[in-house]
Image: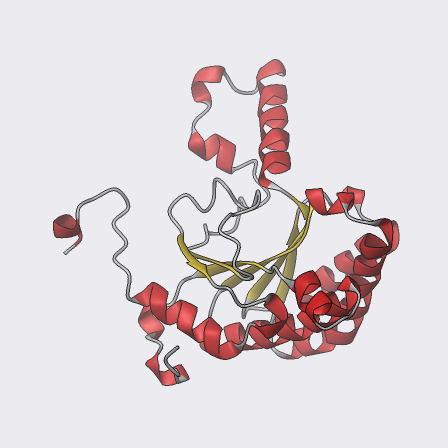
Length: 248
């Protein structure tokens, strides 16, 4: 991998929104003879590094896939540990987020999270709501299938109530009922750990995103590789259904 310096990243070609599937914490820990939660704890350090790097670069939106609806099926001790880790990470890093002008948002089924965690999340969001720098979006108890199902239910209810007709429904209608309705679609999606799938993450929103897959496990994902992913993005031709000649 070429060693990149921050100055090699073109400021006028930054992706507005980067989304990351943070994968490999458990495998990282098992390779070192530790329990999976140890990997999640190390992964928090990587989150801090990437959030800081995003704010320094001028990335406007960063979405982190922190906990999926399917993750509830993991062993109970791991789920409980993850919930505790989420609370402690929020408490430890909130002051730094506020100092760096980071605005915190969440997407997902927050009602399925423990009440104590929801309270702390809402408090952190309230404190950061006027910040104008990086918007950090945590996907918690989130999956696209859940999100799309909720959107369909809400739109169906509007039809039943006579507020809209079936003919009124278009993609804009659907988009307005997604968790991300006020957030631009991701332009770059990064997945760590060597898996080549998107795991029910922002399926509609990432229809035209560029993907960057790396074998690096999340705890080892560095600012340097993050810059590499952005550099790689900046040197791709994005056609959106057109031909290369039309783009040029």
